[in-house]
Length: 112
Length: 114
Image (cartoon, rainbow over the protein chains, first blue to last red):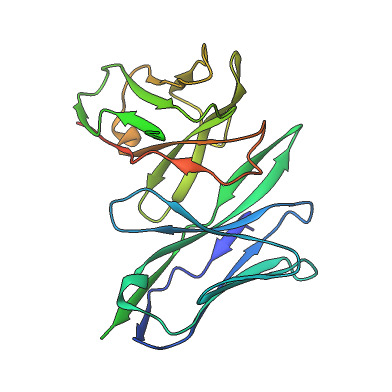
């Protein structure tokens, strides 16, 4: 099983739709979780960190389910500008040092 | 602040050539890392550093060397380029000694090996 897995999509949704992405991770000791956004041919940029109690930033809501080992990202009222690839990232510990392991990304395309 | 600066942005090499990808950050971040991104493979960690003088291997280190003589700079060296190293390379940095803080990425180096 891959350490971090995401549905690659693409998710094609109309403007105004609500869309949800899930990301599963295999290391139960993982402690830090993030969602990044990557536009075509650009670098990844932090969208939001994911906290244990869940957190919201405007139209974006991130949640963590430790029991089932997944994180989720909900986007409400999708905009054309939300079209991008969304990467989840999990801090995974191997040996004494933790490193960030990324999922392969889920591509979102928001249509007019 | 410039953030994380990578040079060059594009490079074409012939098989067997060597080169160094440069990465510099001006945020006084302790943690720096190099990733490669290939279609269908996502971002994979090559090498990382938790501070000046300290480096370690990530998931795909073969064929690459790194050094960290200063806090600001973290160059990635390709010893003898191979077509399998054709990829987009991203350098990233974060505050603190580990990767538990959000990563700041450079805008990438697109490398083609012929």
